[in-house]
Picture 1 (cartoon, rainbow, N blue to C red):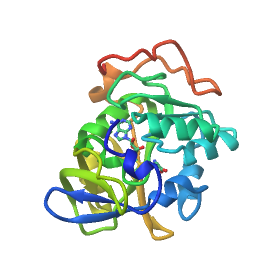
Picture 2: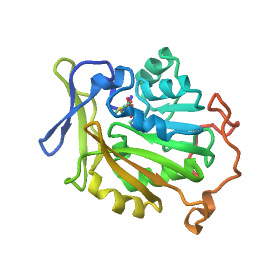
Picture 3: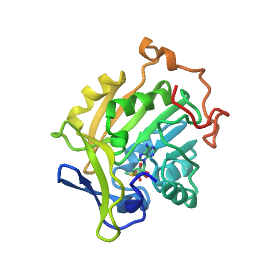
Length: 237
Ligand SMILES: C[S@@+](CC[C@H](N)C(=O)[O-])C[C@H]1O[C@@H](n2cnc3c(N)ncnc32)[C@H](O)[C@@H]1O
């Protein structure tokens, strides 16, 4: 359990931030079919993709339907069960634990605010960068320009059930993308506003000594998103 279950189970949901602010969450979108800007994320995934914090799996399922090898990753058993019911290949795993295909994925998704996972976007992007093959990219959803980077403790609340547990989260506005990409040793390919949402693509360099330790052999995952046997749970490299 990671505090998201209250929102994953459906209904209107929002972030209660420890500083007293309340941020609405698109929880209905997590359960819907892909729409309203998702097509831009899907179009960016031209090869094996790891969907980090896949939730109920709408993007993983859609990529699978398009014939793109995909693996959803979510630390919540509720999310994993919902994604499986939807037919998405998924593993229950914290993104900071060892994952299948380390260093070999062509794309990673951080959709719907998931750049906030763990509470430090640079640490998360470095971790996701280690999942990518050289030249691979992470497609990230951002907040509208103007907010910079904000970090805080948050919990998910709904109109009905008791709020979930507190956890660390972060919010990154589109204008902060260059700074965050640079700190994570990724190249910012583009930032765009589309269908009322904001997205960016950050690329891992093909050759860069900062990534040298984590660059693995260049095999890609198979069509089930399960490239090898190195998916055991353990400390990240
Ligand atoms: C905003 S929701 C998912 C929305 C989903 N990406 C979508 O677009 O429909 C965030 C998800 O991230 C998952 N999550 C939070 N922390 C995580 C972590 N450290 N590792 C993996 N998943 C995590 C939560 O369980 C939750 O399902």
